[in-house]
Image (cartoon, rainbow, N blue to C red; front, side, top):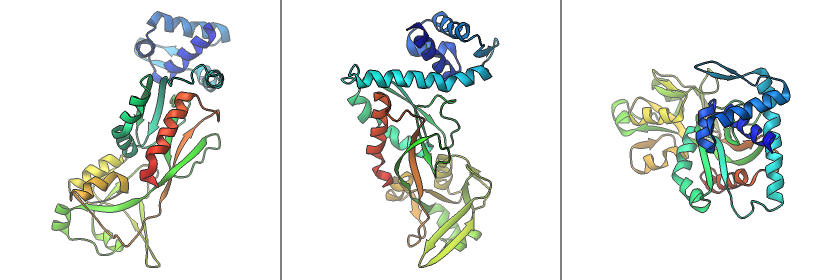
Length: 295
C-alpha cells in the first residue's frame, strides 16, 4: 500500500503546490510526504517536481503521471464503495470548481450537505473560468455553456437565465431605456470572460435585438459586475438567480421584462470514471438537488 499512499500524496501536492499544505491536510508529517514523493520518483525513475527554496513546480514527467494517478486512486475507491466498505459513511475531501455566482449561492446551502455527512469536506475553488480539471486537482466543476472537451463526463443541471438590471439611482439619473437598442446610449457593464466581443442578445415580439455592450467599466467576475450595477455604474446583464433578492428588495430594477435573453446550459462535469467515488457522487447529487434555481 506504500505506492498507493505515495500516489495520494502526489496528487495532493500537485493540487496544492505545497508539501506543508498536504501535511496539514492529511495529518502526516512533512518528511513523510517528501518520502512519498521520493518513493515515486525512485519507482518511476523520474523527477516529478522541480524544487527551489521558494517554489515547487511539476515537471513534464509529473504532468504525465498525474492523470494516471487520479485514475488508479479513483478505481480503488470505486471498488471499495462497490464492496460496501464505505457505504455507511461519506468521508473525505471533494474539490469543486464553481462559478462565482453559483458558488455564493451554493455556500448558503452547504450546511445542509455537511450536517448530513459530518465526515465529508468540501473545498470550493471559485472563479468564472476553469482549465484542465486534472491539472487543477478538481473532482468536479460546474461549467456554463456547451462542453467542448470530449474527455469530460457532463451532467446537465439546468440553464442560466439572464436579465438586464439597473439600480434605481442609475435610472433616476440617466432614465430607463425603453428598448434594447437604447442600450447604445447607456454604459453597459460587460462581463469579459470568454472573448473580446460582448454582444447582448434580446428576443421579443418576433424581433431580435443585438447590442455590443460597452462602457467605462468591465470585469471578468459576475460578482464584480453585480456590485458595479448596484453602485450605479451602469446596466448589467446577470443571472436571474444572482439578482432575485436585490430585485425583491428594490435595490435593482429589471429592464425589458417583455424581452428574453437566450439561456445558457449549465453542467456539472468530471473526468470519470462514470462510477464516481461515493464522496464525489454525494456532492454531485447535492448539486442536482439545489440546482432547481436553474430549472
